[in-house]
Amino acid sequence: MTLRAVKPQHETRTRILDAAEELFMLHGFEGTSMRQLTSKAGVNLAAVNYHFGSKDALIEAVFRRRLDPMNAARLAALDALESAGRPLAPEAIIRAFIGESLRMVEDAKGGGRNFSRLLGRTYTEPAKPIRALIGQLYAPVMARFKAALEQALPQMPKEELVWRMHFMFGTLSYTLAATDTVQLIAGCKPEDRYDARLLEDRLAAFLAAGLTAALKNAVRKAA
Amino acid sequence: MTLRAVKPQHETRTRILDAAEELFMLHGFEGTSMRQLTSKAGVNLAAVNYHFGSKDALIEAVFRRRLDPMNAARLAALDALESAGRPLAPEAIIRAFIGESLRMVEDAKGGGRNFSRLLGRTYTEPAKPIRALIGQLYAPVMARFKAALEQALPQMPKEELVWRMHFMFGTLSYTLAATDTVQLIAGCKPEDRYDARLLEDRLAAFLAAGLTAALKNAVRKAA
DNA sequence: CGGCGGTTCAAACGAACGTTTGAATGCTAG
DNA sequence: CTAGCATTCAAACGTTCGTTTGAACCGCCG
Image (cartoon, rainbow over all chains, first blue to last red; front, side):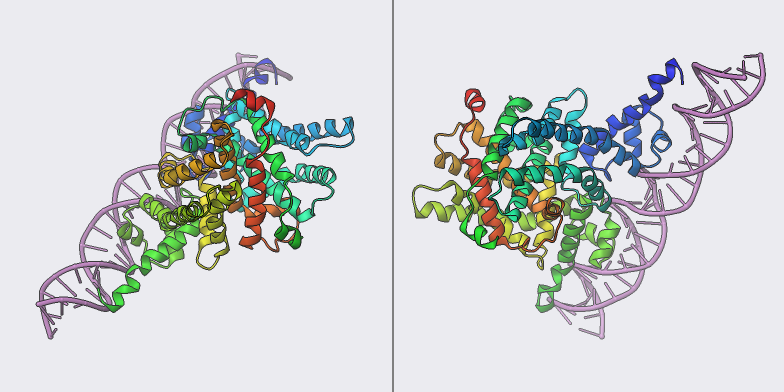
């Protein structure tokens, strides 16, 4: 509990979390073994069970370390918007949501890029405990942003809005997870892939247009 | 090679493929064991190695069974469009691409729904051999649709189009993979989730608006 | 200086992994 | 009827899995 304790006290934990972040991203949870993980982290095999209790508890810790602050930042950004001017543009709300996560992609040094891709692929992970965890961590943010969008688009049928939000999260999560897939389409070098500012502009324009698209007849009838 | 051979000759293969489709979707490739898989399929443990050679070869077979016909159907749909009228609307091109996959989601009985979700989560799978397989299976379709969109949107910078196509595939794959996540946003019952017609209308409207959105200043400068 | 909590370590636990084997099975062709 | 072939089967292969154990190590406080 003195000088030395302050730094290395959690150094092993941090090294484990960083290694887990990268390996989970690369091979999935079930595809990553404790032996790979502890080996990459440079710690003893038993360290994970000592510090976290189990592999499942480690998974939760990996998500909480980044997701809690990120969602807090999203809510703060929305707070700032709402406290300023009255009528919120849909695109401003979208930027409040995606900005924080895209900035994380840029942070390759701090491991944010690994986590971004991990998070992106986790959205499509159907394993029950993980879905439950993600749902729990996201519920408050989801509710706030849904309310904000409902207010910004009062004429949109609620059900249509739900679907369009679903599409938006899909686009974002895929963008986070598979930035490299652009090459499959382009067939060329990446260039500015990690310029968060530019990517946010591109994505915000795309999403805002989709979100505020005119209603089709069939859809309007179903509502 | 006579009567009996026609049906049950490949019945074991089919049962394995169906079980693999569902289990890979639920637990991923590395998370699915041969023992679960053969047990669910109701076949002997050795059957997979006998009929397919290895687990990896089974994975490839699972994708080829559905993806080859689906991409052929996409190309056929685009052919039909191009042979008819000259100027193609972007939304028509989009529908040619997404229609076939959304119709597969509806086919819960034939296992198409399982495969849809498997496919959706595979887009964010970074494992090298799988990315290579997917890339190989999709390359021709990607090239054709990219060319069609370039022709339909001649004024759009090539690089911006690449990104918007990336966003589109992301939205589609997420929609296929995580149809249940709508509940996270809506917090209510699913209702018409599997009405492919309605879903295609919603998605096509969203994507067409995003694809043809006005260019932002920053983005235009970068191009 | 002695020992005490927090941490690391090598070693081992039983269970489950993908794959292989060689004998049994059942239909087909001669 | 029988020889032959594709398929199925139970059993075992060696390896790796997540977790547990008990001893060693360390800097700090009494």
